[in-house]
Length: 104
Image (cartoon, rainbow, N blue to C red; front, side, top):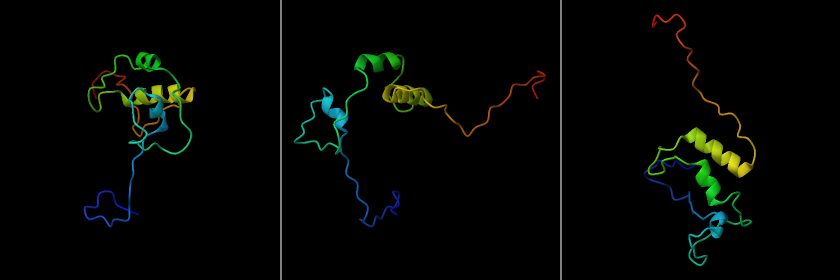
């Protein structure tokens, strides 16, 4: 197994990035002579741009970590799968409120 953090790699591990076939139907103008697409069927979008814009209205895509991850994942799941997203699980436990109001 290769260690991705190894600063002296063995050269046995290789990675080659390819574009999703979904990108063929976009207006990006990707030239199939210059871009290698993934093998398999040509995927089609589940919704148009207006649908996604409406679902993500108010999101700040200007930088990393500015979009609420759980909500974004829920929107992606429901938009791609067409079913309700499964309940999210967290490793943190819920902290109950202070019932006696003494602050302790």
